[in-house]
Length: 372
Image 1 (cartoon, rainbow, N blue to C red):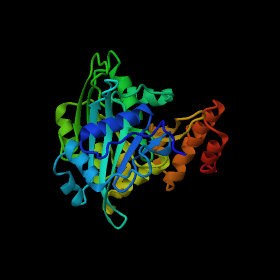
Image 2: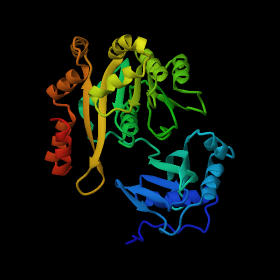
Image 3: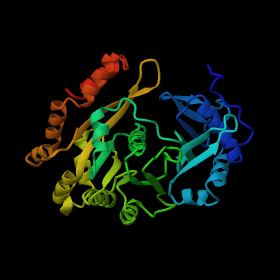
Image 4: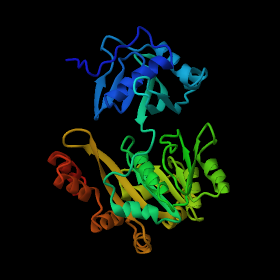
C-alpha cells in the first residue's frame, strides 16, 4: 500500500534545480536522510533506515531528466565527466521556499549500466547546515580532543554511520570555547558541515574542497602547513599519499582529524599500513603508532521507538599502550584485548545502550556475536 504521506507530486518532467529543490524540500519535511535519482526507476529515499518511494511506482525518472538536473546545478560538463567514468562528488544547498531554512546535501553522481544500457544514479545525502552538538559522546573522547596539541585522531566506520557528523560535532564544541584559540582548516570532498553560524569567540575556520580549492588531499595538507594551523580536518584517509601526509602533519605540532573506512579500532592500523608500498610497511607501522592519539569506531543501530543511535568503541593511545602494541606480533588481537580490558569495546557500548532501553535485545545479540 502506498503511503500518501511520503509521496511527492512530481511535474511531468524534471527540468532544473527549481524542480530538484522542491523535491528535496519535501524529502527534508518527512525526515528522509538520502534521496536517490536513478534513471529508469521511481524516486526513492531512505527514511529511518528504510527505503521508500517518493514518486508513484509508475512514474520513473528518465536518463534525460537526471542529466538535465545535473547540468543545471553542477555544470554543462556533467554528462561528459560521467561519460569518462569519473563520478561527481559535490554539495548542493538552497533556501527551502516553504520554511526559509537553508538545506544542504552531499551529492554523488555515477554512471552505471541499467537494463542493458547507460544509466545514472544520483544520491543526495542530507547534512545539517551547522554541526550538531556532541550527543552522548563519552567524556574521555571529547576531553582527549580538547586536550590535544598534536597527534592523529581518527573516526572509523562504514559509509553512512555518522563519522563526519561525530567529528564536526566535536570540532564545534571545541570552537565554541572562549579560550580555544583554534585555527582550524578543513580539507573535504565535498565540504559537508559549515561553521558559518557557529559562535567562535577566539577561533576561526577555513574550509577547502578537493577539486574546487585544492587539487587533492595530500597537496592540500602540504599547503595547509603554510597557513599556521592548530588543527586540520582531512575528510578521508584512504590512500598512501593522504595517510602519510596526515601522519607527517600530526607529528609536527598539529592535531589532525580524519576518517578511515574500517570496522573497528583493531582493524584500523593494519588497514592504514596496508596502503603503504610493501617496502615501507615496516616503518609505516611505527610512524602511524607514533602519530596516533585516539581511534573511535562508530556504528549506527536502530533505536527503540524509531531513528538510530550511535554505538562506539575507542582507544586512547598513551605511551604504555603503544609499547604494548610494538612488542607483539598479533597487533589486531592485542588491540582487541586492550579495548576489552578498558571496557570501551563495541559490546560494552551496546550493553550500555541496551540497559538504557535505547536498543533491542536482538541488536545487542548481533554485536555480542561479533565479540565472542
